Image (tube, rainbow, N blue to C red):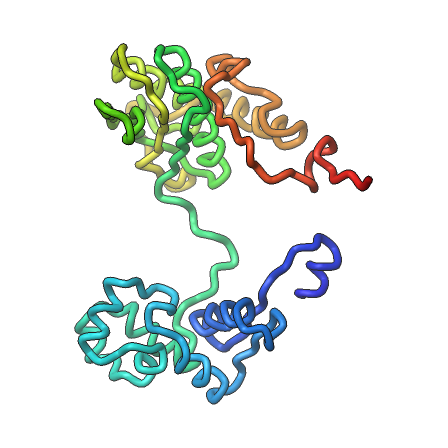
Length: 296
């Protein structure tokens, strides 16, 4: 697997194999950090993962951060091996059932299921800093229209609908008179229609905007989303129309086949002087003809 990826796309990867998800993550880390592994670490026997656990701090385990690490230190647990041999019931009192499962995982007993498909996001945010500070309302409207459109695309990709939105923008926190505004708003009905989402985002930004400030960042978040297959609509409103659904499907199909941004809403603007500068962005060697490496 490692050799094939390097041969075909020149992508360096580390491969970790173990009987549980937590041990596999540790094996993957070891594959990258221990030169003798040469990019592949297999923990298939207890003495192998014991050797690694003894040399791994407890905060190096997936799901254990510094705060929890300090609580475990009070129980004389400093390394991953200390946690693996600890009494699960006693350790659970310092945290929750997830830590008890982690102990089982460190001993080679799988308790956490592998996710072949990532779970749907419960919130979808799209935020960016401006390449040029916005001192007028129009650039703010254009920027938030773009961000709302992208959030709507992600929403449709996971087959969800949005019920509420969070809109915000602020000036530079490193300059005097820092100014930040935000608001929560509900959509007129649960929808994944870009037009409805953009319209609400623009209305909120127009309401929040105050002249005399140089805004450097804005964003929107779809903070209340639901699976469109199981959502029960209001008795007096059947949700978005079938025509709207087909229009959004057509929009996504064109943008997938012709490239991102092939079809956009006019509200996003054309010149976009506020767009991120991205001077140091890595070249897109595999997706753009004009960025292919040149041999001289």
